[in-house]
Image (cartoon, rainbow, N blue to C red; front, top):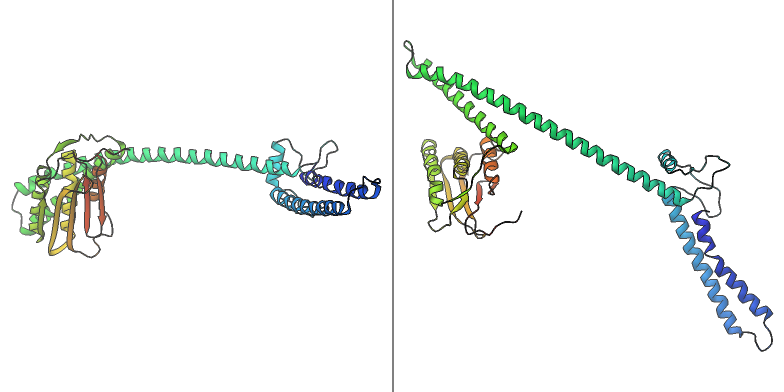
Length: 353
């Protein structure tokens, strides 16, 4: 029996009650007959019940038929054939689809269609999850393979640059024969290029090690001034060469930072050198280090004026600095001309992760 037929049967009690009221009015006995007002009210209530039940039943029937993928008028014969995907889902559930002639098969209910549709969607979701899991596993395997290849390439590249650095250094320090000024400049430029390549390759190696969790990080409390002293010394030398004024301020009352001093000094050196490199000549780079409102240590680096296009992309040095800081619970925010680094300190409350 279809769900529509089941719902239409819900109207039968109201119809039956209407006929009973009519019979009561017609065959009532003397002194036992119901008053006309009662009969009228009962008839009105029965008719109203019939109308309301009919409207609600019709609404529910149309909605169920829409969910089942049919379009048919109540009592009509028009219907749309079942889609192939639903027929397949019905077949998986052991249900015969409409339009499939089988003398022994029972008529398919709209609820069967809805059940088949839900089953099909559930199967599709399971297949999609399995496919996503497979793609994720393949992506992880490819990323691991790329990491291994990158590690091998950077190791070989570092060895090759060392092979080039030694003869260049020998030629520059004790040349065999007389070299003119142009030849010395060319050798010096080659030596500088090889040194730069060697530095970048080592930074790339360290990035790969960080990503693979192979870099050892040991955090210990350290005084803020002591932490920044070597970094500020290197930055001051770079600022003199670039004709930029470095103006540092380090608080004497700030609590000790809980960091890996070597890695933080390397990261902060990269940040300050990058800030100096992207500051216009005769500009200023302000470094303000002290305790923040949240009990952490905040180091703000402000450069002005900036060179046009300086914030367009993040260099390899800054990427490595960001990863070195984030690996030990620090944070770095770059907003235009201002770079803010937050370090955990002894006075900071522990953060739940």
